[in-house]
Length: 339
Image (cartoon, rainbow, N blue to C red; front, side, top):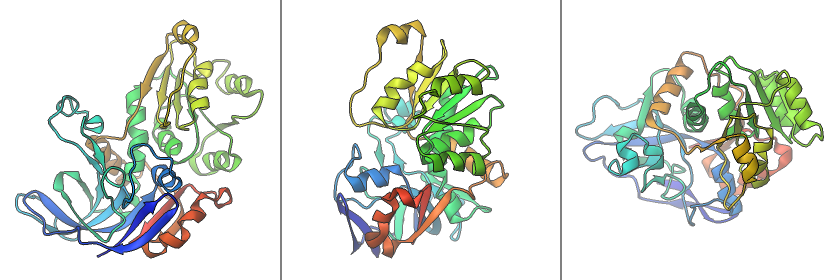
């Protein structure tokens, strides 16, 4: 069985593995069809991904096809297309018992802590498969990415009195934007990349986009929001300067949700933090309910994934061509790998 492994930062190799096996009770053998490339994969390639060890078969944004199911599996007939939830949780710890499987004490993520989906076949727990008889594999491979944004927006508990700033218009910021737009409140997106801001305007219908490097950023932000600062800020940059500076642009009594991950420490100016009575949240991964809800929204046409995929690769072409995705001139939003 063919696979591609990230041997060390900057180096992929095509290999043969024998990891797929006959499904046991409650398991399903799947054929991997599409693999989304996300920031985690790009950071791992650069050697900058927390919690990552080498060598590793990457790939956690997966659209798969059921090949064979084990005993005790209901539904999921051969030929069914599914999104695969890549979060392996224990189901027993305090977090899992409270339904917060996304932050299980023993959480492992496929493609990060254990080998992922950049291989032809996988044997997985049936409970991690979310089927659709309407969506194509590349759409299903986007469900995990969308889940990051869905969970973050769910955490924020936005109401009709809020206004929103999304900082960072990369794939994670776009996933947040996808669900923030579902709320009929004022919305602004900021980034330092003009092409990403243009994408938000032209492809995602965002009215207000701002250059984060503009010296008049705060003034322009208030103008876009009718004179006020936003009450909810999502920081999807993973940049410590942005993460700790975001509090300056938050309205008193507002919420700051850190979606991007930084491998290190950052600080706040405590008097300002208390003066504004800030609610600070992190957001990690997604839950199974997010997967189910997103698939339903995609099937109903509420979410249009057409603009997302800007680059295509074959699995065989990954070792020679993956590095091209890092070129700023590539204007990457989302790359999709075909198996």
